[in-house]
Image (cartoon, rainbow, N blue to C red; front, side, top):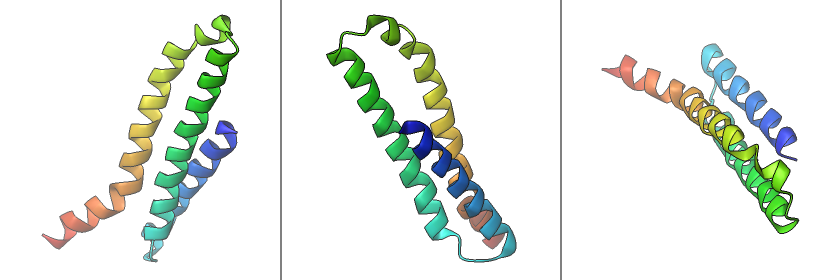
Length: 93
């Protein structure tokens, strides 16, 4: 599930950037990109929770490495999604 939500978040982020580049209203796409990023993190948390409940210790041994990737990708998603707002603020000054 988290793969599907993550893919949708990536697509929404690119739609956000494309809409900004073409001069269209991008705020809905931005909200969708950030929302699907949050849903991806929730789905991943649920997956790890299921591993804990099932005592799947071998799967949990890989979580610390995967956690770093989630942090990095979440920060990149936030920066890409708010980039149009930051660019607009810079251009207005």
